[in-house]
Length: 69
Image (cartoon, rainbow, N blue to C red; front, side, top):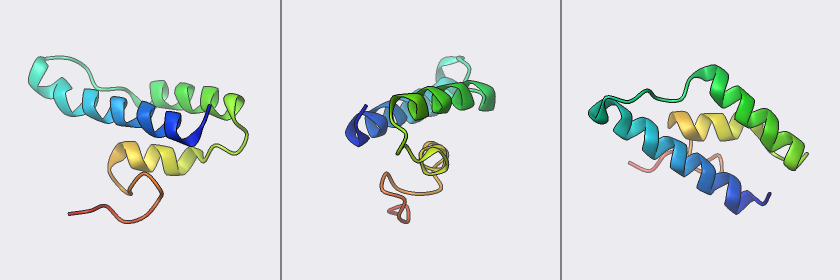
C-alpha cells in the first residue's frame, strides 16, 4: 500500500470514530487499531505505525506535523 492509501484508511477510521458517538456505534478499539497497524506493516515495511496511530488519535497531522487549528 502507498502512503496515500494509509492516510485514506486513517481518515476513514477517524471519521467513523468521530461519528460513532452520535450514531450509537462503537469506535475502533486499541486492539482493532493494533491489528490494522500490523497488517499495514506487512503491506509496506516502511509504514510508520506510531505516526499513523497518532494521526488517527488527532495528535498529529497526516505527515506527522502539528495539527492545524
